[in-house]
Image (spheres, rainbow, N blue to C red):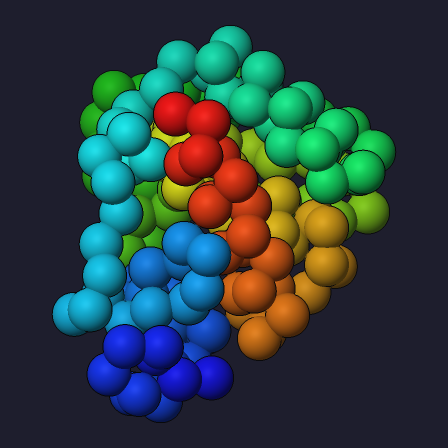
Length: 138
């Protein structure tokens, strides 16, 4: 995959350095609109998940919050990054952690469930489509 603006080779596995919005961009060429990255209430993310699943002809995906929520962000620190969420493909379940209560995280995890793949080119493409669709409704 290549950034559509600068042509830089991009690796979906390095998704922290990428922006998914219609296409997959390097973070030097494109950035998310604030509405996609602001923290949202859990109930709102559940509603967005239902809308996204319906719009993309997917069975509903369950969302859960961390049952042991702590306001201490160190709990979510793993390998030099924050743990935002985890998707269970077989159960069609997303566990959201406080740092990941954002629309970008929801789209990221839904793309995993919709494709059944990890950080591949197909996953990246679906993530970009989901994010663009959500942005169009903000």
